[in-house]
Each structure stands twice: as structure tokens, then as C-alpha cells.
Length: 481
Image (cartoon, rainbow, N blue to C red):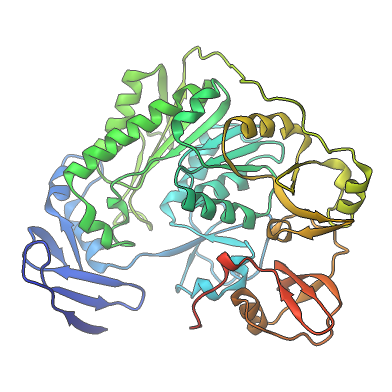
């Protein structure tokens, strides 16, 4: 372990810092700050004191596990893109059908299969959402689900893995840059039954009684992720906890009307603080006609502590709405057009398997492929929200040809006749960096660049060069492998 010192000005706010390089991440040891100092990590004493009477808290083991400062690495597989890459990783996340613990943390950035969407790097405790949904929701039904605070996309891709093809998931993120990341991660998952919106939670009150399930993984003080993000410790305070609790109540209040009568609210945080967890559940019960639903026999919610489970701090609860909310649909406008134009259909037939099963719409010269059952929902959302993503963006038409979009490359609906080019690991990394590379026997025209048979994106092969169409905003910037 390398140890080196960085001296800052001597003050309570900026004390000397000792950096400990553990090989996985750096920890900071602050001196004389009024915190409980643990090897490489400081836990706010106010947090320790606030947890003394909280169910399941054990101060000794809680401190010890943070002293280790090592967090397990876990991933969740994409059931739509099965791979044998992790067949030697035998330790499963017990509460997730697709979750795995890894023996070592690889350099994920340089794994083409991550960019292809075959798995998602997700903290194990948060995968318990799967259990919560399976125990409270009939996932065999065709559902309308809202993931209200969805970025970066871990819980949305999890939900998408569980629901039926005819169900639809609306994933919302208020911050535009985070909404873009959310859309990218859902695009990698490859399915058609997702929509990404970029709206304030209060906007969803327009859809009274619309959703069967609303998932709120609320912004919180983040104490449950201290091991993964030591910097979060510097931002933690009881005042911040109180501020987060107020924000959480506002978000729930804003979204309550859009949940149908009998619908399920899943509420979660990555905080240890009771004020953001059980107290919020109590507040919901007082303010709204609802009841809690048991998850693993617990009715007020389940807590995850890193000293008791192999994962980080997490809280999750389920409630069922018992009100008499009328289902009021705002006008969705005219039906989506362009679905029966023969010329378009024949162009798309070259790119999409079973094109006759689907419909599409055009916006700003882009064409989006959707399920016919979702047409009225997409139109409703299109007229009332800002849509960052809807279905599969196929691309733009240029005469009688399609200029394919990156979303189409990663989708599950591509025609098998499309030319595919299998890349070596070296060339796959070059492609993802947008560096120059060569092919042994290139076939002219649009080609799908693949690694281990999974699509990475498009390239157009010309007589004297290869035009790389991998999105520049997604390219690998690091040169260290």
C-alpha cells in the first residue's frame, strides 16, 4: 500500500489529509475534525449517535466494516443479451436472479461487453428492488411503471429486465445531463418498451391515476455509500439530512396523484438516517390513504447494513395506495402518423426483424420504433413532457436509405441479414475510442461492429477508409488499459 501525504492549510475545515491507496480507490484520513476516525475513513459522530436506537444497528461491527474501507464489486446481467463472460464468477447476489459478485474489480471501461450492454455495474443492496417488486406486484401483467428519479439507470434497467414486453417503463430524470446518461444506459439494454423523460416530478400530477407502479429512489444524504464514495462524508450533516427529508416529501407529494388506486409505491434511499427512511414511511401513512406492504415479513421497510449483508447501506419500503383517485387522461392528440407508408416500411424492413409487428413515428427527422400497444401512451407523453428517448431511435432517412442511429445498433430488433464485423479486443477498444483500425476483408457499406457477437455500434466501410459512427460523447477517453 502506497502512502503519501498532501499538506493543506491547518484549519478545522481543511485539516492535513493522509491518502491511503488501497488499489481500488483512495481514502482520506482527516485529523481533529470531531469525527470518529477509522482507518482511512471518518464517520460523523452525529450519524453514529443518531443510529443508536435504529433497528439492526450495531455500532461495533458498523465501524469495523467501514474500517476495512473495501466495498464488494457486483454486476447485474442483461437477460436479453446473455453472455458466458462471467461463468467463473459463482457467487450470486441472493436477492437478485441476475446479480453476481466479482472476485476482482476489472477495468470496466475497457470491457467492450459493458458498452454492448450485456451487464450493468450495480451495487448489490440496491438490487433488492427485484425482490420488493416480485413480492408486491404481479409482473406478469402489462403494467405502466414510472421510475421517477431514475438516473443513472441501475433500477430502470433492473425493472426493464422483469416486466413483460407489452408493459411500458417511463424513466424520468430532472437534471438534463443525467437524463442523457439514463437514456444511454437504457439504450444499451436494447428493449423497445422504455421512455426517458426529463421533467420535474410535479409534472406527473397531470397523469392522474395513470401508473400501476411508481418507484422513487429518492435523492438522499448518501450515508449508505460512504465506503464507495468517501467524498460523500464531507457533505454529510444533520442539516443536510433534514433538507433531504423535505425534498423527499415534496417529490412524493408531487407524484402521488399519478399513482392509480391500488397502485404500488416503492420508496428507497441509500441513507442510514431514520429521518429519510422510516420517518418518511410514517409521514406517507399520515398524509395519504395508503398502507404498507410486507417485504420479507417487514412492514416498515428493510434496511441493509454493510456489516450484516454483502453490500452497501440501503433502505426500501413498499406501500399500496388506497385512495379513490380518478383516472383522468389528458388529451393525447391525434394518432401517430406515418405507420403505413409503404416506402418507409420497405426501407425499415431491411433493418428491422418483423417490421410488420411494430409502428413508428417521426420527430425532427428521426424515426422511432415502438410497440402498437404503446402508441397512445407515447403520444400522451409527447404532448405533455420532454422526451429524451422513446422506443428505439432507428435513425434518419436519406432518400431511400436509412442512416442508422446508435440506439438501433444496440437494440434487440435488428435484421439478421445486416453485415456484422467481429472485432478483436484490440480493434474493439480502438473502435470505442474512435481510433483508426483496419479490417482484413472489409465489405463495403454499413456494418455492425461487434465483439463476441454483441453489437458495439455502426461503421460505414468505404473503398479507402472506415467511417466510425460510434457517438463521440460515448467514446473511451482514457488511453490506459
